[in-house]
Length: 480
Image (cartoon, rainbow, N blue to C red; front, side, top):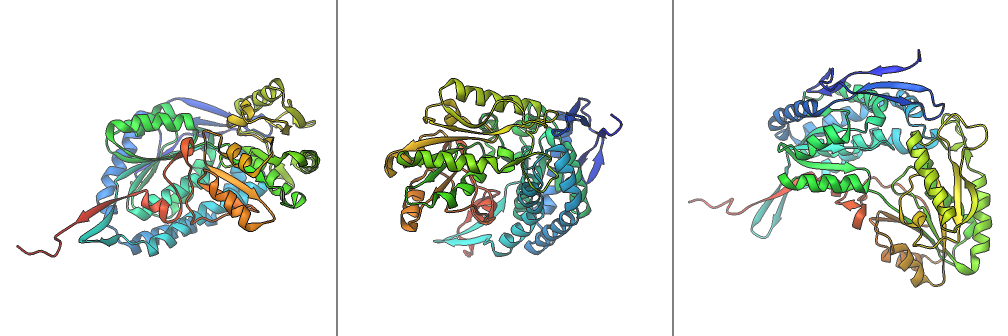
């Protein structure tokens, strides 16, 4: 207990202040189960104060020049970059993500998001000519940024960077389950010395702070990353004031192994796609679609590959699977594993319970099911844990049909020895992004989904577009 940290400050108008909210939440270390942090949560009053601060800062901030905002983005980048070691340590303790994915996937991306936004801003055309109209791309106003717990730093900085690039001010509501990470990041962002009120960070519940942001008339736009259910609730709530909404939601992404692929080469990619960030990733490739006639070979290769995944202490560089973030998330994953067995799928690896020697934390055995049909619960619903379903197909057309037989459409993966064929199949997958023969990172490419994986796009020019509204001027040269 003596190591437990207490957090009782939020960030409004350039200052660290004690929340009006009085609810205290305790959170355990997911690796050890010991109490880690006690957080005082913000409430609706705090949200209103943050919105008022952002509204007051907006008139001056919206008139800043491109160069001034590029300078701010550079300062934010530098401040976050300098604190990477601390960000990593806090993320390992509070989230339990493996060192490799936490460092490369989240901590380094946090500073890179500001550098990427600066690059996009430098080249962005804020005034365009369309026929006789001069179209100005103007900032929206105060934006609400609501972020999840599975890559806290990356989501906060990615959304904030684009809001700043656009000339909008921001109220950020990070997940209350990431309070320590948010506190560490906020202190770094503060060092960049931006004008007070340009960004405000209010850690609280979705049904208090999130609901206030959703209904408040002074919020012009919401960018939300999280579950599809919450995204739908935000979209419904936003309609009363016609807020603009960007939603990046869940996924049940297919990985298609075509029969001409080198399966031995593809399998490490396929297993990584299903399990990176301990499986707590919206773009996880959790449905592995394989040719029926090669199912036995696939099963053998998957079992070999899964056995190589070290489950264990997040700080160990060899660890590939850390704990689930909470006991509740652990129970959720266990429930899906039970469901897979009940529905008749073949358990190839893993299964219920905790791996031997890791009973104290929220550890899951990386689990693979074969003989899954696409109508099973484990093939339909997002599990958010290291659980892979192998589904067999007979023809290329059937593979595409199964891949697209989902309510989601966030991501897809295709492996083939014939590049022309791989591209043909990839172009037919209904998803916001498709990776061909590998795993990639392109921060300038749009990110977001079709169907119930969301609305709109983030990153690059597409991400900046989402914070701007076109305004057409005609007769701008006409004298009376």
